[in-house]
Structures are given as C-alpha cells and as structure tokens.
Image (cartoon, rainbow, N blue to C red):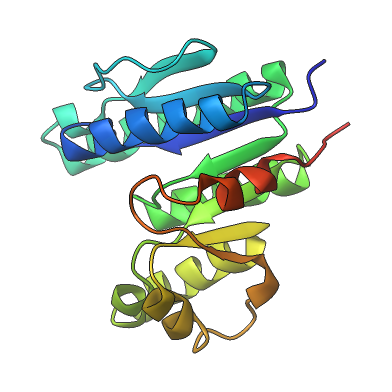
Length: 194
C-alpha cells in the first residue's frame, strides 16, 4: 500500500474555486507524483486534473433550497467520505472549508481519533472567525487545535491566529494564494498511517 495516500476536500469547488482546486491539485501531483490523491468536491466541479487524481463529486447541498435538506445532504456527503477514506486507508485529509462547523468538527474528531488520520486544514480568515458567534468561534478554535497542520494564506492571518489560545504555531504553514512555494505544503503530505 502506498504510504502517501491523501484526500483533499473542497465543498465549494465550483466557479473560481474550481479552477483554484484543479490547478493546485495538478501542481501538487507534478511536485509529488507518488501521491495518490482523492478529491472530494462539489457535483458542479467539471475541470480536468492530472492523471492519478481521483475526482469524487459528493457535495450537492447547494442544489437544495430547504436549509434542513441542505444540512441532510451535507451530512450524507460527509458519511460517504468517511466510508471511502476508511476503505482507501487514507493517511492525510486536507480540508479547505468548515461549511457547517459543528458537522465538520465532529468529522475531524472522528477521522483523527478513530481512523488515525492526519488533518491539514486551511484557515482562510481567522479574523472573521474572531467576529463570529461564541459557539462558532469555539468550534473553529477546536478545528484548528485538532488539525495536525494549518494552512493560512498571509502573514497577517498567521499573526491574527496568535490571539487564539491553544494553537501550536509550529504546525502553521503560510501558503500564499496561488501556486507559489508548493514544496512547503507538499512536504507535510509525508505522514504515515499504518
């Protein structure tokens, strides 16, 4: 079994984010051709990616108008991902967003502690989380604490995270938007899960 099996999850992989994900994953695959990548994405994702990247469109919650049906659809997608990553013996899961934070927190907790999977989480805007409700703020804090690595896009985001207690800053990676310095990000895809 390949020691470098990863999953990349972006629930919002359509429009501009679709191109970003396609370019990012293709570039990672070029830098680290030995990675087996499974990309869990929106059913709206239509872009091509490099060979060796399995694209699994599982998120269709945006197609529904009812909030209750959106939540149920999102939860169903998360359960499908858990089953798939378990069957594939995924070692690392890189999560782009926490769309429904309590569900995402439970997902991260489950795969980290019950499946022994390493978590990479992209923290897009820590300042906005500080302005959020108390519940959302604490959920996001615990997502950050549970993650093995955190990706931020700017040095100012990194500095803002220093206000969040409980975060080990040795695990924070500053990865500028775009495809610069991908080696910094891909070096963290070398963890093993037996």
